[in-house]
Image 1 (tube, one colour):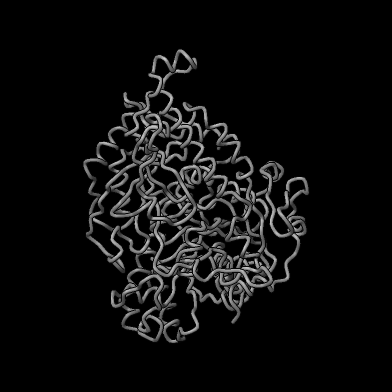
Image 2 (cartoon, helix red, strand yellow; image 1 turned 45 degrees about the horizontal axis):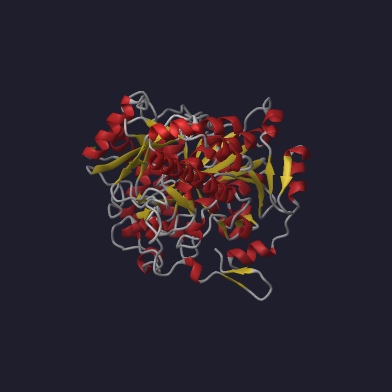
Length: 584
């Protein structure tokens, strides 16, 4: 079989303006970036707002291995499958970070014959939104350090007299706005800035302080882009972003620094979703890219809103397992104005569930143990507990579940048949085998038919997992006990103090966004299957006031990933024709 990039490059693509015409978008609302991608103006939604919404299919998965379970392949494949059976379907997915692209996981365009194309454009830069976020975010950092520098150099009274502005009295030890870059770079997790250049006046390079970088897709600006419902809403949210605290304990916002307007100006074009196509000519909106382990893990509300007016079905993907992006879709995105799902496609694989037997050690960059690939019913019987957890998790929200078994070449029919029976026994409303990777839309017709059947038979009674008006500690505990099956959240003294401050400042009624490992339902990546009785340590709590959620860090989760010993960048190159090779 050809590689993903070879399949993408051999595809016969239609011009993006032709696709836009087929969708019914007006020419003045479509801004091409080359021949095969275009920005779509939010004015298009105003033109379409009186049309009825289509149905929302939310794609999630069991707890993945480091290589993923094929969620994006199936998001694109299900979209193709629905179009193949005569429905009008559009996918809405996230823009990938270049961190994983050049790391272990690779790109996020899908794969095989279920891809968004051109995949080089998709995985590298696209229309520049992530670069715009990096630039806007780091302008905020520069504004912050500049204000500290001038106020401390002149003194607060002198600064106020010279500028006519009120001194913000920023405490350098309480700056919460870390810089960002869109690469995996562990050396930037903790650094010192403003170090003295020998022979220069004191603090000429700024006030020295401890600083660090997060990956751009973990930026609060990325979360805001995904949750904003208009350019003006994005501007208002940027103004609310808390960047530091003063010596008096008062929050210092981007509005206080008078930088929110410029940050918005940099991201004016980023609020518009990007229109692309899949290998069978179906439409795909690509917009925003928050990680699901350190952010809320879903594409934008505005892309969903436009797509829902244009299609019978919108198929969107929530990052990692149902304890991650799916939970955050339901408790954060849906509260912010996103449409509640009509049905959930829960992706799993035989090899992924065998990994939850606890019999194998899966290491990123190394080949899988043959015991996960070859027939091994005992391992599958032990690992099925993870599927049970995720089916039950979907049901907690009142949503119907279609188990989507992502077939791999070495899977046996005997084990696939066993899985289909077991999924129904565990309570799934539907189950089908997906072969989209090899056969595109035809390979996902069975899944598409199940989704259509379940949507016509089951009316969801969507509900949230916790009461957003409860205090922060209660919500964290509810998330651990009801959402993960643990015994309780163990909140550090530092986190307790942070929670007390947030509640004192009036932020106690926001939803919570848990930053934790994606490799286990718990905080501990070694706990496989369906663990119970575990305690989740909350080491730190941060506020994303503009995005509208409280952000809790558990265990050893990092907001800046690192690279392994054999990262993907070692293979990627260009050939003599100037074409990119080995991008996956």
